Structures are given as C-alpha cells and as structure tokens.
Length: 266
Image 1 (tube, one colour):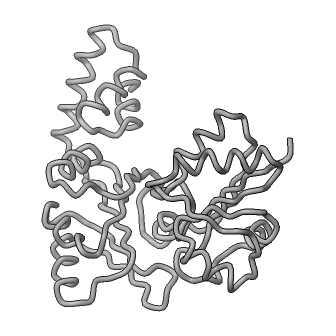
Image 2 (cartoon, rainbow, N blue to C red; image 1 turned 180 degrees about the vertical axis):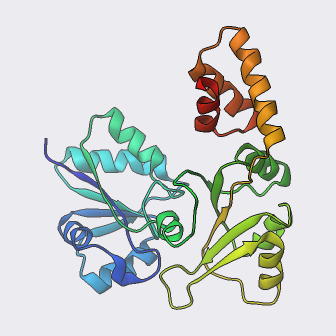
C-alpha cells in the first residue's frame, strides 16, 4: 500500500534543523496540514514548498480529519506539521491519527526535532528513565498530584514562561531541577540547580521563549524502602503476582514500577 499521509517533524527554533527527508516530502506532497499556516509559511518560503497549506489545530482537528480523509480518498498526499517539533507530542495530531488508523490509511512518520530529547541529551542523569507529562496543569492541586506520582522518577514537562515561577513555587525549594529555554536558538539557555536557585535566577533575568523542565527524581531513603517492602509483603500474602503488585503500588503510591518489581522478586 502506498503512503498518502506523512507526519513530519519541523525545527523547534533554528530553521536549519529540518532534515533532508522532511524537505523532500514537504516539497512533493499535495497538501500540508498546519497548526498555524502563518508559521509554516515561513518554512515553506525558505525551502520552497509548493503544497497547499490549510490549518489543522486542536480546535478543528476532528473537522479537518474528514477533509484529510477525503483528500486521501481522491488520491492526494498530505503531510501534517505542527508549529515546531513533532506533531502529536504535546501538539495536535492524536485525534487525526486515530481517525486515519480506523480507516486503515497508511501512515509514516519522519523523525526529527523534539524539544524533550534535545533538552535531555544535554542533562546529566543517573539513568535513562523519565516521565514526560506534556504541559503541566495550571491548577496547584493537579500539579501536586502529578509531581507526587512521579516523585521518584525524573519528571519532564513543558511550561509557559509566564507561569514558570508560579509553578516552581509549588515545589520543594531544595529539589534539583533543570530548566531549558529557547533551545536551538541564539539565546538558548539551560540552567541546573535547586528550585530555589532557579527561582532566584529568573527573578533577576529575562524569562521568555519555550520552556522545558526536568524535576530530578527524589532519592528514596532506606526507611521508605522498608515501607515499600511491607506493602509488597501484604500483597504477596493476598496472592497477587509480582507484575500485579508492581502495578498496584506504582498506581497507588507513585512508586517506580520497575523498582517495585525488582523488590518483589528479590
């Protein structure tokens, strides 16, 4: 089956970060569905894309799905792009992809820029595990619930520069954190330190541009691990399997599932 629909990653800042294959595809498709046609027009003018552009964003994604399916049924090729990065990763795309998959339409995704991986690649980390939650909720209670759930896992999220300081005020001041902004651009900056240090820094420095944050996992002390083992033993006595125990404790207490599983089988 020939491919008629492409998911294409675009630069997150520096326009030179687009791949050769992305340029090739965007030059040959008939239509490009864009989060914002004005943003994509800048890229199209730079690289000479002749495809027709139309908007496809979170407010009209369902409606646009029908248009895209109709175009593909007519033998046209369509590419989906967001304003920056990879569509579907905290950007529109999931609704459309669901509709296309249900119609058994062939889809291919082109690898490329993503703010999360660009950010993580320059951070010191003890392991590869992290939880990406997209844009963190604005509500303080919801923030606390999420950060508690991933307390013992590196937690990565996006935040607006207008709300970053307010969000950081809801986190323990001694926690280690990394903040990246303006990635791939002229004024790219990555700061690593305690939450208090980062707050103090940005109270006295310009804070603008796209923001990516990683709150480092909190170390689990021996006492909390003993408590974990107690919970595990209770569930073992009830006849739960190691896999079920790791799922239950991870869900109820926000513990790392792999770590719980290792303790279960010890």
